[in-house]
Length: 382
Image 1: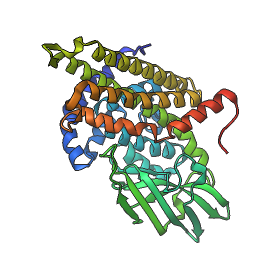
Image 2: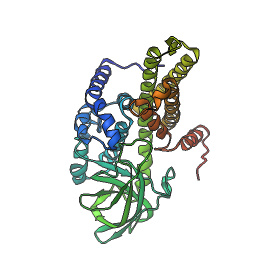
Image 3: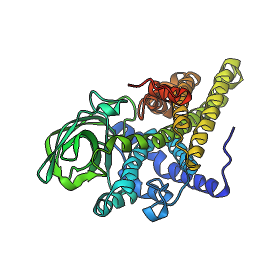
Image 4: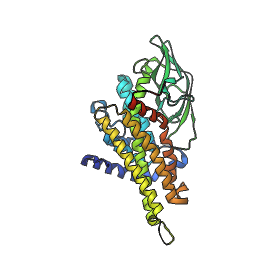
């Protein structure tokens, strides 16, 4: 089923498409070659509501529905997965700050983020910790008026460029005995080591290994309540999974569109390859996956708009859409033949980037176990 948008949503989508075509598409190839990100576009994207637009107006947002937000993320996915990822990674800290920040933290960190004037990262995963967030090893020990941080964060999107970020650490203080808490760390005030990771996928997202060796931050940089880090982190993953699903839908749709166009114009044996039954079979399989992914994505977004947790719906959407997007990109390469290998053509980029979608915010295997737990009431986790 195709989600039906109202006139306001359609006008927003049209404006976004125009902006992406005029301002983003022409610069993608150069940034992909240089492995850089155009932070200067963030203020313009903020005008569409891409930075916290789903927040209530009294919190600095525009009151955008989750369905509208999914539509917006689909458009980014159709354009450039690295851009969609960087927007996603900005909105995680925005949500945390909107909920847990005190007045001073809101002015210093949230307001610049909402305006597109800050570079941020979210420090959760570690060299030995991925899907099992509860096993985080990084330590934060209270020493007088400062927290002393020791440990490492790995696969951190935007970490190589971030001005500041939120890190989750095992906390030791009079109020905590090893529970997880959230901390704001500002690289402009408290330097730490950030090393770039050269990854196959999402080349323009500044993925990094962050190392904290006796790094001291002010006591006031605790975000939220002591020991509340695990709950806060897990609560944000549901929305992030819908974001990834929507981006995957956009990427898959773009691969399908490019494949149809190519199949109708590419000729072999004296006729367009679109006339060959096996090529049509690829296109049909791609279309089925795109439409099914889109239906699951908007079902999950609608659940969030109804005030439901959307836990199962989000996991189903993320699981199916991320895997389907890679399958669609793979079929797109087959339709394009050798042209699909060229880095001068977007299919190769979509192939690389869609492969990464089944890992962040919980791997495909973890999503399967979450869905199973929701169905049976029996958890496979420890």
